[in-house]
Amino acid sequence: MFKELLKQHNLPVVGPIKNILAQTLFYFNAINFAQITTMAYWTTYRSWILVHVPWLSLPILLGFLLAGIALMMVLEYKFVATSFYTFQSKQMDIAKKLDEILKELRK
Image 1: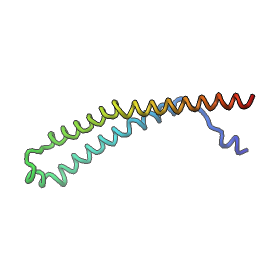
Image 2: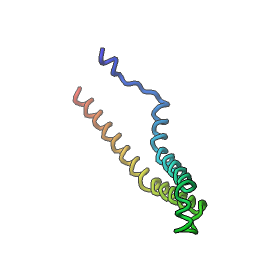
Image 3: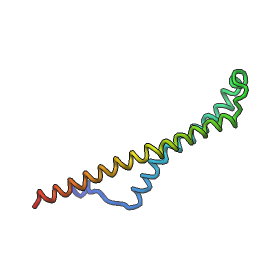
Image 4: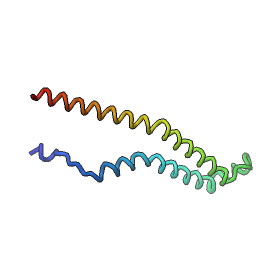
């Protein structure tokens, strides 16, 4: 009874969607941060910024944010993605080797 209840099912659409969402959530967070920063600029910090940093207008602030997001995307592409896929492929190789060992042991 429990074996049927806990049986896993392979749904071919769910895995790729979850993978894409997991990898792009970081960028959604960056966009959300930019929106929160823009709102904070107009509602809370604008008066302070105009007094202490008068050259920092909203377009310049957004430019800094976009440059930061672009830098994070480049770092993600150059280092994190390759490291992630290398680790994942090593794990898959280990799983394949374990399957082969189990088949040998069952013989």
